[in-house]
Length: 364
Image: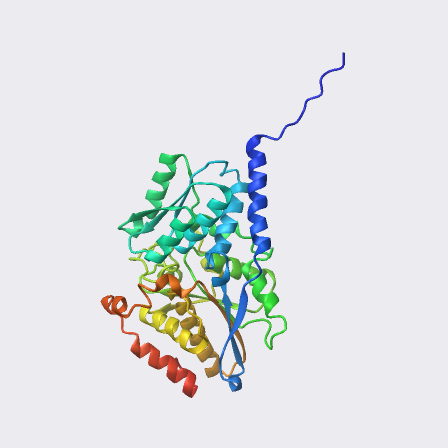
């Protein structure tokens, strides 16, 4: 009798992973690209400022892109299988987006977060079926996430390590490629500056690598809030520096995260928290767009660069991001009592913004 021919059968977990990847990619196909808004500057300045609105993603923030990439990376790496609990250390928005994708794949999700995380974000994580594990010291979120992963037999997604490698920096519809595609018909299609904050460092790494890969002359500015270690680490060339952590959720960290790539950053600006919140609220006045504190940090940094361009007689364009919507911060950044309790005075920064826009001074 002829020898039996081996029959190849796909292992059940490979079939589950294939279906999981299909679901994540189908979700991306159902979502149109995010909008690129024009921030109104005086026409005679010859400078355009654009805001890429990442708040329109299904989970309402820039972190939707990151969560999608992290899930695809983990699935393709063999780290997730049917029933695997997913653990993440997050100040909120990444956890909201990861809870969404975990629910899409039928996986348990636990978010390890600082106790001061806004109640609106906690409610969103729970809405998507996630569980919130709050700790008092934000510096302990990494160790606690590892402990929970070991205890549950789960996978610690670890956005702070994998953000810079989970996204294809060469293109593949990443945020940098999207920005340049949308600018193609604008007066200055290659921006002078792109301005972003750093939480994991993944977005700055993707954009910084992309502009070099495409040989654009665009420079990358990373804005950093009070209490964050990124600015000091970049300035000193020392990734071992530490800090207390940031009050601006989503950006700024007590340590320089592994996904932060200092070499692709052309300059950094330190932005006071009061300036971030003043710019966040000023955005509502000028455009009607209600955004979060990290968007205010971005906007203050972008306008600072606009002022420098004017002082140098430059024309061109600047791009920054609307990271998430303002509804998540109704009880914090948009609450005057909360702001006062933090010892923040927004008025001087608001006056500076109004004077800059009204009189066209060369300094913000």
